[in-house]
Image 1 (cartoon, rainbow, N blue to C red):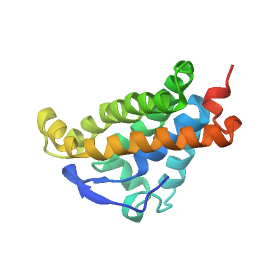
Image 2: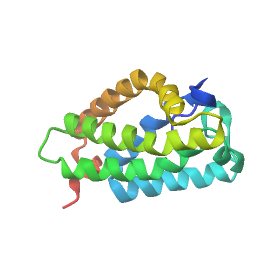
Image 3: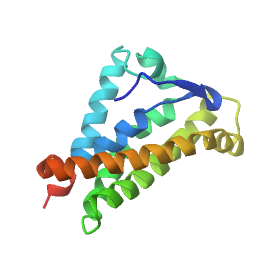
Image 4: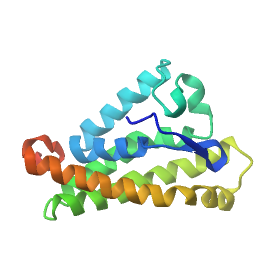
Length: 166
């Protein structure tokens, strides 16, 4: 899920491309398949596979500053997929962007900020301020997710499972 790029910030939480992988899981696979794919990914990480930023893996990552984000991954993919289905009347690009913003960013932060608070000495305001550094990169990931979904839908319409569910 795009782990190699890593820049540690926000109380030990690295900037990665993994959140884009979560967005794409929901956008491309739909809510259930996207969430299940992410759960499988997290299981493999828990078993020790070094798939997270910086080559991290194992149960310890679920107790660190990134834990809240990790626990939010399946929910974020689920919400992103649900929104992608709900917004079928919109273009693929805009529905993917909106679904990624709400599911892939807002939901992820709803889990990530409390996770930072629980694993560091930061209060709610400080934890919120710490994650603001992620916003510009997240906006880029949203647009890239929209562009990828649009490109895939144009070339292989059936590949966008989230749009093909009746």
